[in-house]
Image (cartoon, rainbow, N blue to C red; front, side):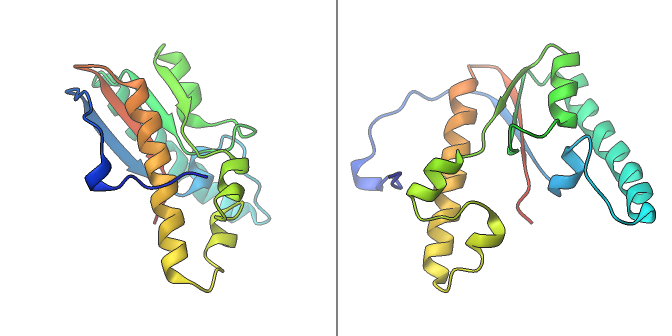
Length: 153
């Protein structure tokens, strides 16, 4: 079970100097083939996804060397495709399903947000965010520039 670190027991860490950009968006924008019932929704999505792609391209043009993404591995994604195109390091930083369940955090955000205890919901959000932050830190080195794509809004 993953635990949050306590300030008093924190071990000395090696610090790196890196630039990390965090970009939050709706999960449907990051997927290359989301499903829509209404064709009007699909047309609007295509327009928004184009803007999303242009934003990502701007970061990659600016020298981002790592892209971390909160996405299920079974979904093809815009960010993964662009990272490959730019020969940029890429990693899925989402906490694995097994670990989320082991920590009583539910398989997804919809299930998590149905928990009656607000303190437990916040505990789960902190665990997942800490996990993703650790994945990003493991992938960066001094002077690197990273982009973490999350969807928490």
